[in-house]
Length: 222
Length: 179
Image 1 (tube, chains in turn cyan, green):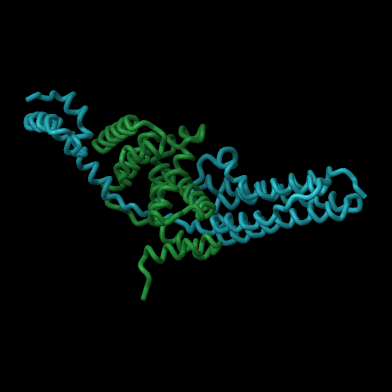
Image 2 (tube, one colour):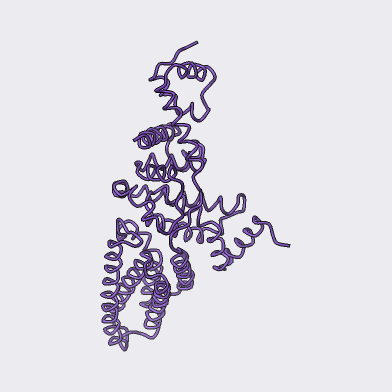
């Protein structure tokens, strides 16, 4: 029978622990372990580790209710479906509608991009860093809200220059984003510490501003 | 007569596919512990695990129509959550940050969560401190019970790589638990 040295034994440790070692190698391992206390201890620890991992609870409840953030997001997605229209001859309002549909949809999907770009690297649930991050989101949302109001006032001044169809499309899409913002803010009132909701709010305001900027640059029609 | 759990879940899925968010919330309540536990162990970071859990359920809502009922909803949801975490881990530039913070915040201050036995706490901390690749394979294989072939399919790595990462993880864990 082949005899294992320590190096050979340790190279087969995982298979030994998992019970997947073929009989010839298993016999050689057993033979080595009868005389080597160092390897015996390593195998015992390996088995203990494996059993401890198996015994870990599979279910762990999060420290806070995550449902409000999920609910806000799936509600937004439902609204977006209704914002798309059937194709009709291309006019100013239609071109705008196409761009707006993308922006309105992006209110709800932008967080996916945000995961790569805007998400804070480390966000604790109840720490000082979290307070800082939440405060930062709050500042950003407040600034964006102010910018949005200014742009909206500017757009209002151009109302007579735009056709009723274009105006209607602009207002309808702004209304969809307003609805999304209302729902996010409502969810945030119940869960002020939810970073995801704060990020969604900032994203929604950014998209609203983008939409308003496009609307204010539309060529005069009337 | 009260319906069997599987029938109950099926009923909830059917209602959720029709847009019933109350039904989907009940599915969430039934499975969130398993999903969050998986996310927490795979990413080693509590706040990140919360976000990934939320993302997994949002994605489940979008994909519900593709759930054919071949397996239990909880199994389907679990697999979907694995993919969400793996997708996150593939994102460039994140691994280093996670590894530098992993292991420090697994249990927070421990004030509001049931504290497992000491050995389990030690193990959880040691797992959270593993490098991302090794931690992922260890959690999927030794904790969640996936086979190497399944892990290879999920993660897109070769079976040999999965075995090597598991071996590395176990080696590092034995070392950590000895010290």
